[in-house]
Length: 484
Image (cartoon, rainbow, N blue to C red; front, side, top):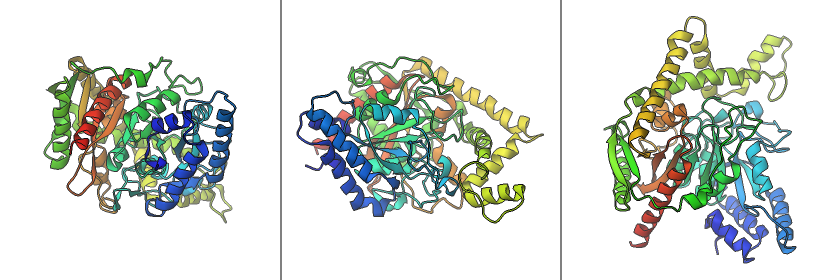
């Protein structure tokens, strides 16, 4: 039995029946990492011995008949901008290449309390700034379906690890699509929750009004299970919402007959790759056979989303990254005697080109004389984008769109054209600007054998409806594959 190919809920069933041990499960995934990691570069740091030790402890508890957590014995990978106590956290940057957090992020603490075994920290675009995972100080993450193509960013390491069987589930962060885009490119399920539903305590800040920790899994049931574990109010996060979360695994199994789904016209423009458009519309047609009602809707301010996002995100990044100056922690330039010289050289040597670009853009739009012209206007545009969604959700329950205008592109293809790279996020950033939950699920393959992702967007706290629709589609698609 190839354990590394199984989703977490199947592994938990085997563990519960005593058919496999936690040590066998972890060993299977570590062996898989050894097999494929040289081609993928999905991990920055691997915790092989620690994870095996934790697995043996779980096995001892089970053998004694003691209570174990909901994820006991299941390996999980953590994006390297989320704190794990005593383990190096780099954010994919030279600036933090030797930083060791003294505490756990809230999501990590909750995972540990439920017995999950953290097997390593995954590669990412530096400080989560990128759409391709080519901006990491530790090298690019490659796509498991084609090593000449990108994995998507910035959570590309987490998505690639789950896709390639290096971990059954992983955490990422999503500021403008950084969970959903790599999920689409790597053929896995990726969910960005409602803003505030999952604590960000222990997540390194990029753009604080947009950042959200999300999940990447092999199937929808695992997605619901993992979200249940990490979600919930946290007084250590001032943006956390005190909202009871229903049993998502149970809720998603309810029927969807009569569910109203909107197709935004702006997400099916001529610029969308024909194969992507065809796959998503085919998936929608399959859902109509299950009782879903479909209608066309408009989100007229979608065309302003990219410009709005890159003004707001870069402005917040400029402020958040001011703390990395070499004075307190992280990288410090050597051989400097003057304080300002130390600051300048540290930031110049410690940050990569994309991070520097965004810091400069953010500082510019916040500067005297330009704040009203750029940042204030962007906030007004953000309000209009949010109102578009509010009006759409008066007519329908959920929205369905492509996750990305294209499938995974080739390594280096867009690195010299930042604007072209930024357009990869055209369909994901609006949900961040509006604080909405959004999920990407595989819905087909291109003729070249590359995954295509379908995005489901819901109203605030609409996770159970999103997961329900995704679960039904997953079942329908699976039947279709089985019938071939």
